[in-house]
Structures are given as structure tokens and as C-alpha cells.
Length: 146
Image (cartoon, rainbow, N blue to C red; front, side, top):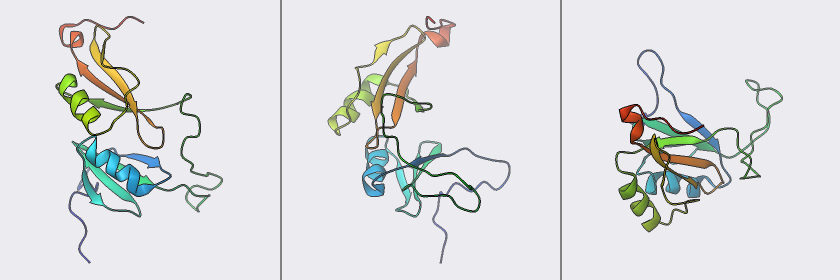
């Protein structure tokens, strides 16, 4: 069997991927392929979608395994309390926003000017928060208010 192309497997050093525990692998895989323009590398077990210069890896939850004893993976159950989120940087937030909305993405707000950047958030099908931003003032040394 031939290995799929574009799997996250560095020839040297390391690379960073992001793993998501999801309720419905097919639904989440479609979201990351359609909304973020990703390329499906593996359909499932685990699903891998290459998005720009990174990968999103998705699998259903499950109980402890020998390499993570005592750990159970579950998708988020409260979308209003988060401890991390995906941060996506775009060259043209207006174009990205319009295209994503046309594909069915639901944003919390339209892009807002935060001085350092234009920024907005959306959720994936499991409720994971995704920040979408375009650097503006930051490129000129202007930072957001605290």
C-alpha cells in the first residue's frame, strides 16, 4: 500500500499539526476542506486535511490508550468556554469572509478593526472556535488595546 501524499511526516526536524476530537468525521472534514480551502489527505482513521501550510487531524473521541493513560478525548460540550482556538491568518479578510459566508460559514461577528488587525471568529461543526485575522496596523507597529 502506498502512503498518501502530503501526510504530515517531516524528513527532519518537526512540524506542527492540530488534532481535533470530533463528533462526525465526514462533516468536520468537509468543513475544513470547503470553508478553509483544505485538501483532504486521508478520509478518516484519522481524517487529515492539509490547510495552507498546516494540517488538521480529526478523529472521534475515545477512552484511555497505553500512550495516554487516564485521558479521554471528547469534543467540546460548552462552546462559550474555550482554552484554545485555531488562529487563521489571511491576506484579504473581506474576500475570505464573503467566500466563507457564501459556503455556509456562520461567524460570530463581521470582521472588526482591532487597530493591529481586522479580526472575526467562527465555529466549526463541533463548536471549536476559529479566529480569522488580517494584519493591518501591526505591520506599522500599531498594537491592539489591551
